[in-house]
Image (tube, rainbow, N blue to C red; front, side):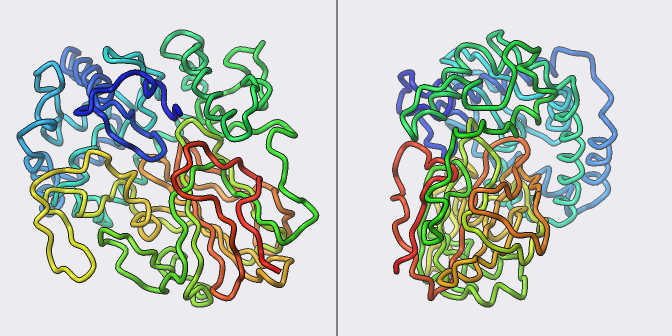
Length: 457
C-alpha cells in the first residue's frame, strides 16, 4: 500500500524507515536527496537577506543565552556516525549550525512543497521543516529548545508567515502536471491510490474532489486551497445517518491506537505514551468528566483529505484551539533514550529514532497545538464526547468552523487542518458502551464519515 510516492520501489533495509502517515518518505535516501538539493541551492547562490520573520528568529537565538546554547548544541549532538553524518553517496550534506539552518529555511519559504523526483526513486517531502529538523528534534538540546515557550511563540510566527505564502496565488505554481507538480502522473496515481483503497473504488481525482480539471491548477487558487480540498457529494456517504448508535469517522485516517480507561493525568512522555486526558483536553473544566475515558486515535496521511466531520449528531458545547509545541519529540526517540514506566533513566545507546515525530503521536496529544471540540450528543447513551485535532510539525494550523451552541448533524464539517497530515482523537466517557473500533495495523485508511464505532444497546 503506497502512502507516499516512492514507497513501491525496492528499498534496501538500511534505508527503510517506517513513518506513520508518510509525512516524510519511507526511503531515507529520498529525504537526503531533497535536503541536498536545498542545501546545494543555498550554498551555490549569493547570500540572501533573511526575510523579516527569520531575521527575528535569528535575533531571538543570538539575543537569548539559553536559546543560543540550545541552537548551537543541538547540531553538535547529532551522532557523527551513520546514518546521520553522510548521505548515501558518502558526502556530508547535513545542516550543522543554526546560521545554515536559517539560510535553508529562507530558501524554502519562497516555494510551496513540490512533488520531488529523487535519484533513488520518486518521493515528496510534505513537511520540509521536519526534513530540516528531523535529527536535531531528538537530541537533548533539541528536545529542550522545542519545548521552550519563547521558541514556540517564534515558531508560531514563522509558520503563520509561511501560511500566508501557502495561501497566495504564487504557491499554486506547484499544482501543475510537470514531474515536480502535484498533478503529474505519479502524483495523481498515488493520491488516488490512497483515496480509492478504503472503499475499493476507481475514482479519478475530479470524481472524488471538488475541482475543475479544465481550469488552470484544476481551479485551485493556492497550495492551501488544494490541500484543504473538499469531497464531492456522495464520495464519502455518512454511515447510518438515522441511527445515533453508529459513530461516524471524523477524519479520513489510519488507525493508530484504541485505549480504555485513560487516566485524567498520566506520564505521557514515557515510551508507552499513555494518554493524559487533562492535558489532551487543554485543562478545560469539562475534562474532569473524561477520567477513565475510551480514546480512539488515528492519523492522516500526507496524501489524504484533511477536513474533520462530526462523529455524532449533537450540540457544540465548547470549541477552542490550544496553542502548544510544534517540533517537540520525546526524549525516548533521542540519544538519551528516555525511560519506561518504573524506570528513572534510559541509557538509550546513543541512537536517534529515524522514524521521527510520527511515532510520538500519543505524546503529541498532550503537547502539540490542537483543536478541542466538546459535543453533547443527541444520543443520551453517549452524552458528552470530545474530538481533538492534533497539529503535528508544520501542520499546526487547526481551523474550527463550528461555534459554541451550534447543532451539528452526524457527518457535518467541524473544521480542518491546513497544510498536510496530522492526527486526531475521539474521547468517550468511561460509562459509554462504545465498541467496534477498527483494528490498529490495517493498511488502508478508514473512510471519513464511515462507521468507526457503535454504541451497544
